[in-house]
Length: 473
Image 1: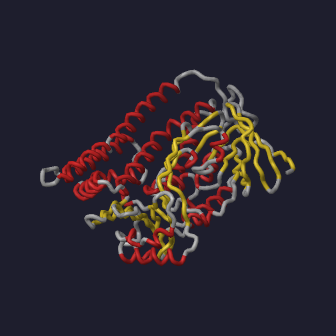
Image 2 (image 1 turned 60 degrees about the vertical axis):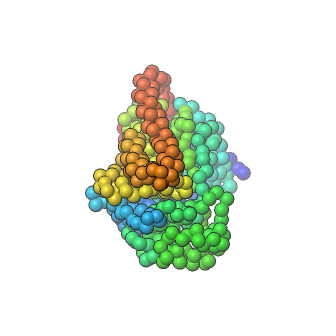
Image 3 (image 1 turned 180 degrees about the horizontal axis):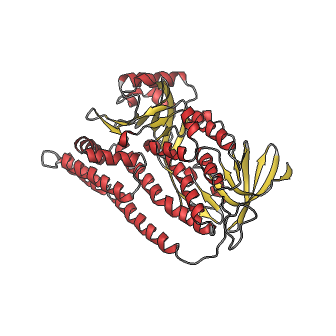
């Protein structure tokens, strides 16, 4: 390939999905020149974010995407319907304050965001461009190479933002380690939305052989997401339709029809990923590149929009110290991300687990939500990313465990209760450890941010340099 040179910019953002678009808008609003590099994948084939909580809708509007949101052919979502298989009961968890979320097909959501941000002053979009190497990265700036239309380009910038998803090639190029666990495989199908018990809600079907999610994505159409064991294929459901027995009959028939008609259904892996750090030198991670979890909470897009705002706030506050701004960003986002990942992990175990302890925990959830309006509201605030404190998540988990323990009532006539109590009590360990770990980390960040360091700044003209202020926008 030939070699060309691209003029230096303030910020290079890699990835044109929701996280990259939101971050480009946030940083352009600070008066920074932004080069947005997008690989140009076919988003119509992706099984990715489609449900947006009210907090995410507010964040998008705050970033100046109100016109895009209003033009979306989105379906309103008023909360979650949690459908228990045993006993056969449903609990509705509405969003607080009468708020409404939105859901729509991933490409229909993402492409208008990309088109809108490309029109922002200070933003240059390059599509079908792939980063091939990060050649240099320290506190004074970055230099990277990318391929575009058969030509290899080099660009230098004061800040590099990796918004290229959970597999993040840029994260690997930066040498940032991650804690990674592959959980399961997700199968995505489209069905008639009329078969949903509550067409204006997201659905969680819990306690059956396979955990299932469902929500509307356009008028008359709903997405069904079936959680399959690792190594499974869509063929397993065709061969073993009894695995869907806990779904309502109309929905079960629609899923079987979709399986028969769709020869190449959308599939993706469900992972827990938490990066060991979210910044190094003059590079920073946002969205799924920094952390992701099982999608059953539907919090991924809301989380990445919050990342964009947190990075914007940190750079605005610490114009004279880029490393401190990145540390502040990491400190601001990480506790909430730990809570989100821990919540998704605990909720997935509770909803999909088949041992006696998890069956008892589901009974505790049902009893807690049916008998405690405050508990149902607090749980929904966590699910909807309105509440992000680890201590609140731990408190709610302990409340559910308490209701579960009351429900099993171990006795001589119910030895199963004794067998369920042990794994149930053992499950309390991870949330408690996460709460302590998060508290200690916050204390460490508070101390570290007060230790002296060399000052490198992000300026709107010229390279980053020691002791030079970020120019006002």
